[in-house]
View 1 (tube, one colour):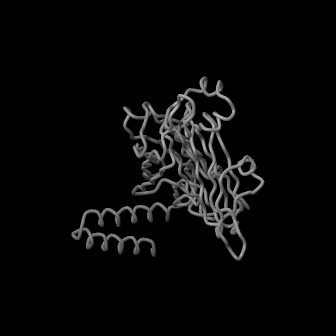
View 2 (cartoon, helix red, strand yellow; view 1 turned 90 degrees about the vertical axis):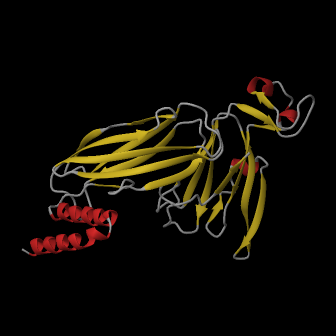
View 3 (cartoon, helix red, strand yellow; view 1 turned 45 degrees about the vertical axis):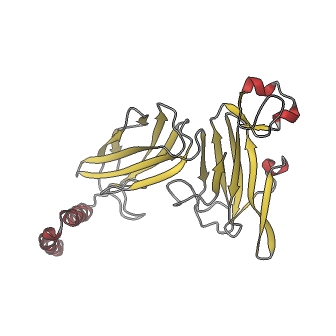
Length: 302
């Protein structure tokens, strides 16, 4: 009886608010629908998709490599409240097929009452070469069909930071450190210091590069990466091979102690590099993108 009275009150409120705007009215109606579903122990949620939609903007894509996004669908509101029964669902993608090809590891399924979570990978593959600061947009929509209809969605706006180079941060709230991973999909070198018949900015192939002397190879790089951070948040693992290989560093003082706060180093063609950073606050989760709003490590590439 109490639930019935509450629903009647919500409907009356909805009828009053509707004249003030369709968007607000729809928002209220969606919340009423969600409440009705939850009172019947129906929960259809996601770690990234939301009812009414959400937009994510990321700028760590290289524009030449595959970009992957992990997300989940689940049948619980919290650790205690879960759905009573199985949930059938389907997924759909919306994107510009002239620019990219997108796929999911599954486009439909059932979240069984005792399994609680289904995991997915959205794979974004470029169909052309993208320039710096170009963007693509992908919308993922998940719709439950049984026992109730509910729609969740997310739009990912993926921007090229530096063409051919992408990065990400892998972390967890319980980890004492995070890993900063760089992927270089560029297959050529750039002359950084003139020598012989080469001028600064000239592009040379890997075949040309291997025939150069060690001294001249040192004057070339596929890309130069600079990472900078605040030592009050994280500190770099000083045993890293990047530091021991002679990378350029700068320092700053925190709590009276000098810490490295930036590092500049070259990366080889078609390579992956990982840098470990230790966290002062191990309860933080600096995973980027999608978990932490921005990268705790500032990334630049040239």
